Image (cartoon, rainbow, N blue to C red; front, side, top):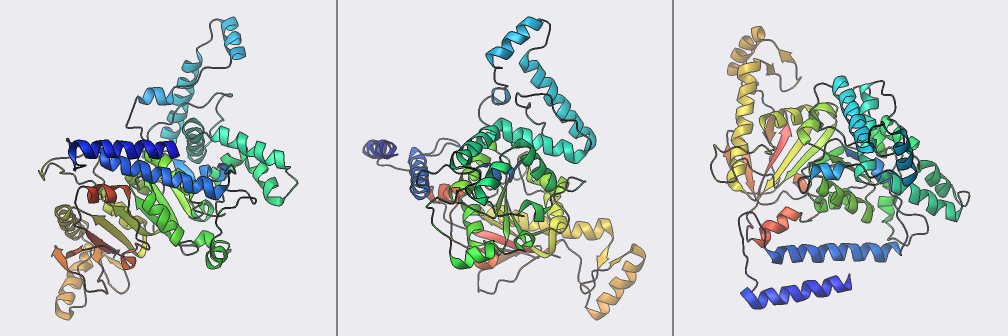
Length: 489
């Protein structure tokens, strides 16, 4: 780490002498100065972890079982090489050569992976999740009797293929075995938990029969990554008491969509221990690994990492009215080029997303959208306003503000006429803007406010932690911030 710090410092001095360290852009590339600053942050993060952990090996099995890889994507490099099966052991190679006509190991993995994907697709045809990678060596896949079994086997396979679950199990059993499984209850529990059967059982308990996440089971036990002998900083008494509370699994659920490298969500979750549990959803697999790293290194007990498309997650695996707050920080606009007619297939905040979010949010649940792109926030405000009008025009349903009773088209006409007279009936809508208690300037589009500034605690940002994208835009002198704070109607 010291050598890396010297190299980064020398590179910074060399570039400063060459061009004054000015901000240089080339298309979508970021400056070498920003990359150096991120490397310095990463080195500092690792240094703090190594110092606090005192060389102890963290127990990774429990946090891995709270990392759900529904369909994260590898966007850099060859996807086939990432999923390629390792060569079999020499003894197994000899056995295959003796059999002669048997298929290759790679062909076996491909067939098993295809069968697993087909089983899950057949049991859950509405899902758009990507196929799981081939299973690791070690026997034929288990018999899959239902959609939940298929899904959990897919998640387990992804953990083994891409995040090293087998290695984590082996290391945890070895570390606890060296100390003696009978030395303490926690050591004995760690040995018992370090098995594929236990991981499979843990994943199965997290889902209902229709493959919806059961948050009380996901957060049934706070994740601890370090052994008792670790000299890691102890949390405050208030946090320790709240984390150990028996009802910690029933705390509100907060979801950040497109979490990036996880700096922001890890900080918020740590500040919210004992008050809420957090979900970090990210589609890029390299960033899923970065979030997992932060969850382990910062010992975040109330965080779950989800790899996959957020829209698919809300549609297929989140129970209605189970999320209390959804956060979207620095979403990528669909018209980066400036042309509003341009399309972006990776655009997240679509009409479908907002409808699914409305279904997933609890009564009076909230959405906070934080951005540096004022124009995009204005466009989102108009879209949300049109969603409200579309529901009125196409669904022909009016919702009473006091009783939330749905009325058919036949009674809607009478109710509308009465509302015009009494003024007590509001136009039904998916979301409304939250009135901020602080005097904050805003613009209004289609009845939706775009606040100018940062959300703060009232908007759900508990601590001031910059994300990767926040630092990126600040480095480029993009310092204007705006946000939408919406409440579910």
